[in-house]
Length: 343
Ligand SMILES: C=CC1=C(C)c2cc3[nH]c(cc4nc(cc5[nH]c(cc1n2)c(C)c5CCC(=O)O)C(CCC(=O)O)=C4C)c(C)c3C=C
Ligand SMILES: [Fe+2]
Ligand SMILES: [Fe+2]
View 1 (cartoon, rainbow, N blue to C red):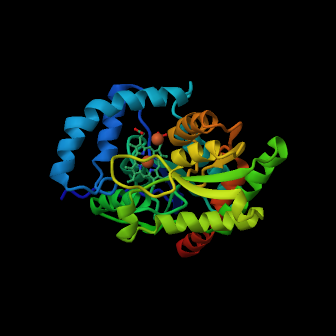
View 2 (view 1 turned 90 degrees about the horizontal axis):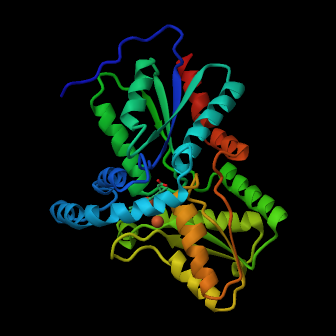
View 3 (view 1 turned 120 degrees about the vertical axis):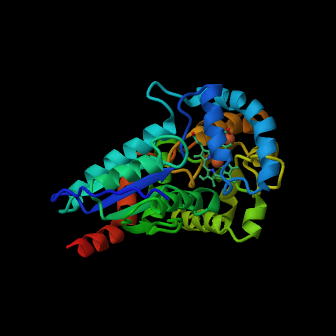
């Protein structure tokens, strides 16, 4: 192994860095860029757990020849002049968190962001931090609920990077924050603000990205953490069981995924006399393809075509000051501990 050395540590180097991480997004909404992105994403054994040889044949023989075109068309629906929403919000979150940390902490702290797939890659950003002589890295995957397919995979990449490093830093990896009071309180206030401006619907649907049921059966805590988040949010919003529902979206492949499915639920609600729904996605720290296109476009259509009359998508927390404040509260104990250790 050729270990990387990071030897130049300036005297005034900040001792601590916070690296926020998200999934990643294609470079452009084109079939070519989607092929590159999906190849990296779907080759991750944490994401698709099928036997490698079989999955290699399916991925390279079928999926990468068909899905990039379809996905590129979907990404074109959400792409803006500044690029992919997921990239824009994650970058803004890092900038805003840096400003807040500068205000709240005396000692310098670097805040940066990285993507698990595509760019800016985790290995590029981690190299940059190590070059600056950072001794303590706090990694916050922006997935409130832990899944091996997301947070676990982020940890793998971190481990792979450090495996190649001659020196390794002090490290904090934030596993999840699904029940953190700051996260719950911020979502509750966000939804209440939305109600004040737009009124309420008959039902609030909390839609989370799905995962295969087999992952849950093998011990992935994701489903339980989603349900706990929903329960805490229901309590904070003082809603009865009739007024709120948890569903799972974004199925991929033929296996059974976590249920109830968001799309089927929208059709059922629309056809069973429910006139208005509002959908919020607590598991998405930023709006992205899966919320803007899949929820606000596709699922809106399912509900309205089935007989529903009013569909509202409540935006994700994104780069709102309240979200940034909540992220600060989540990392605060680790920042304080690392600053004490660096003294
Ligand atoms: C929020 C948590 C997420 C979990 C858990 C998750 C699991 C998971 N995802 C796939 C397959 C796909 N997901 C895709 C997009 C996508 N997924 C998440 C988040 C989670 N995924 C986000 C934020 C996004 C959007 C990224 C963006 O650029 O906006 C896609 C790509 C889009 C498409 O082609 O449909 C796929 C594919 C699996 C298989 C999985 C768990 C096993
Ligand atoms: Fe996904
Ligand atoms: Fe989707």
